[in-house]
Image (cartoon, rainbow, N blue to C red; front, side, top):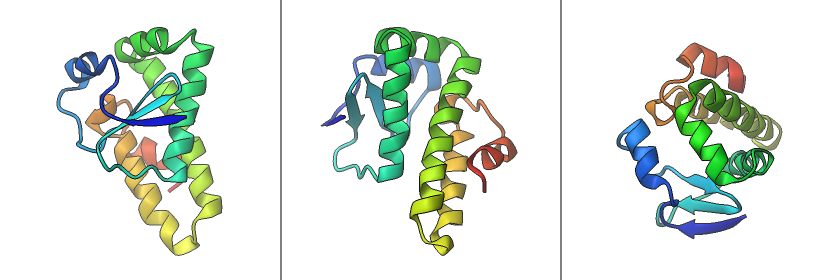
Length: 131
């Protein structure tokens, strides 16, 4: 996956759907990962975004995937749950035990945030990522 500092082609639509976005938010469009300047993409986040690349390919391309993702909260939830579960599984096997809980808590908080339109509760997010 190619990493590019910048915004995806549909950035205005994303902001229109979710409102102001966190400064460090990143977005996958096909095989390009758009990031904020200087963003660090750790292996777990890379796997998360690679999952979205594969989802987009299965959906017929990023245009189709993003259109459905922005319009359909149930679809968005399904897509993010798959990506976050893979991300969390990688952290559970690759991080020392004492580092896992804070990182899993952080990604659960992200999943339950306004970044995704609050598609899950905090409790559901914690269960999904296995905190």
